[in-house]
Image (cartoon, rainbow, N blue to C red):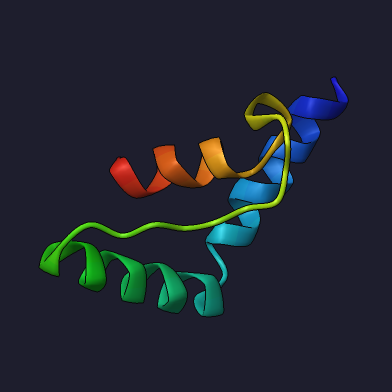
Length: 58
């Protein structure tokens, strides 16, 4: 259950105007070529990067 609430909070954070601005910048870069976003988390299943990847690919 804690993971589900963390997911909801993370996705809600992506809806904030400043997050949308940053995501727009990433999407603009991706239109020009490959983009790599780095993260220090060891386990992708317990990390925000898979959520962010899915959000950007949607």
